Amino acid sequence: MVWFVTAYVVVSLSMTKFHHYLLPALPGLGIVIGCFFDDLWSRTRVERTNAAAPSPDLPARWLVGTAAVIGLPALAAITFDLGAAKDAAERFLWLFSYDYVYTPAGRPWPPELEFRPAIFVLGAAFTLATLLIAFRLTRRFALWALPITAILCTLFLLDVFMPKVAAHWSQKPVIARYYRERRSPDERLIAYYLFWRGETFYTKNAIYEGPEAERTLFDHWPDADARLKTWIENHRGNRHYFLFQPSREARLRALLPPEAQASLRIIDRSHNLFVLGVADL
Image (cartoon, rainbow, N blue to C red; front, side, top):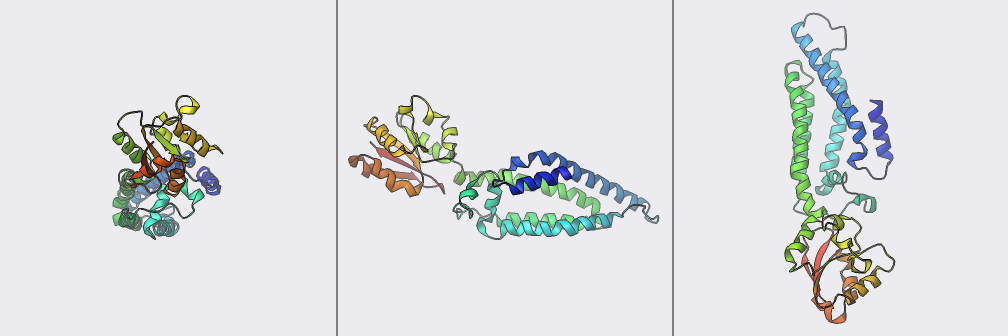
């Protein structure tokens, strides 16, 4: 238990709180929970078979009552925190994305993503199972209901929540659109002022391969705009794609040759952070 508490405190003090930071504490926490359930199951069985004899240890109902008094308020606070607003579910996403470091309120939340009903149902299921565990007649059922609810919660996060938000936080769908639209590899994808590295991963490093003059990643250099203009001058006569943030559209258009600026058009705005454009250079 000390192991878990120490890890929790360390993660709480960290600016970023990725899920894998707490990973070393999870085996210990799992052992503690497993021991608690096993002990509670054993106490319940003894109490049912020998109800007349006083228990020399703390009765199961008092053990569960103590856990409930501590756990239920924490569960209520967490459920409210995740469901208080439509975009509150983004806190799940912050386990995998550090957006909140730069924008404490999070990125714009897509209006079609609504997870509050599922969050409140799961919170109610955990609450009900915890309450049922306090009664002898329903305790054995509750000892099954709690882990089953935890499994359902995990399945919801992995198979519903993450796939739906991935279309708006992962760069994969936008970059996949580029590969569907291009007519040949000569039509390059240019990543303009991106720092998330998904543009490198999902292109299999294609934007960063070859001699420096041929690379199409323009982000951290002080002279990134000048480098992009040079690259464009050396690759005229073809159509190329641009992945960038919507706020940089005017700046990017100004870097194109005057006769090509009108050809820049946005072909994918489905992402809540990036857009995909194309221009005839």
